[in-house]
Figure 1 (cartoon, each protein chain N blue to C red):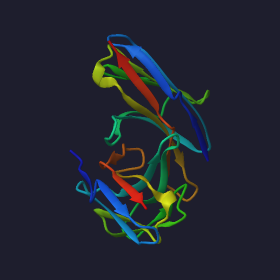
Figure 2 (figure 1 turned 90 degrees about the vertical axis):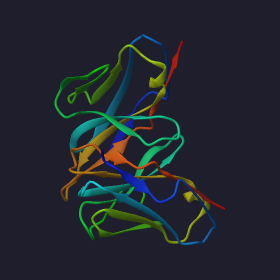
Figure 3 (figure 1 turned 180 degrees about the vertical axis):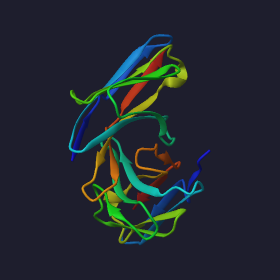
Figure 4 (figure 1 turned 135 degrees about the vertical axis):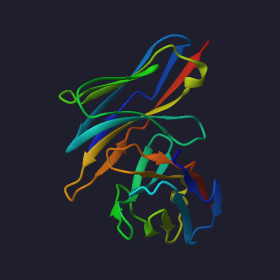
Length: 112
Length: 113
C-alpha cells in the first residue's frame, strides 16, 4: 500500500511566522501535490511537482512556496503565516497523471 | 479552467441505491475521478473514467458522458459505513504538459436505518 505521511496532524502557529509542512511518500511516485480543504470550497490545489526540483503553481499559490529536493519529500512553506491560511492541508502523490492520487491524513493548521 | 458541480447533501436508506451526480465544464478534459472521504480522514480513490460508459466495481459504479459533461457515482446496497463525503474531480490537461485535478466541493451522503 502507498503510504503518504504528513509530519503533523495538528499545528498551531502565530501570524507572521514561517511555517513548514512536510510530506513524505514511500512509493517512488513522480508526482506530488499540496491542497488545502475548506468548508464549502472543497479541495483546492496550491502547488504540485512532477519531478525533483520541479514545481508548478496550482490554483491558489499566493502566500505559499514549495520545495522538492528529494523525490520522496515535498514541503509546503508559508512564508509569513496569516489567519486566512488557517485550514486543513492535504498532501498527495501519484505515479502518473492519470493514476489515482494517494492522500496523506492531513495537517490541520491554525494561525492565531 | 474548470467548473465542477455536485449536490451538497443527500440522504438515503440502508440497503437502497443512491446516485450522486456531477457536472463539469472544462478545457482539456482528460478524465474524471471519484473519491470518498470520511469525516476527519484523507480522501480515498474510488473510480476513474476517461471513456464514455459505465465502470462497475463491486457495489460502486461510475458513469461518464463526455459529450454532456456529466458523470455519476452509483452506490448499491447501501451500508451505514457509506456515510461520507463523495468528491468528484475532473482532470485537465495543461498546455505545458501534464495534468491537474480540479475537485468539486463534495456531496455529503448520510445513510439512515
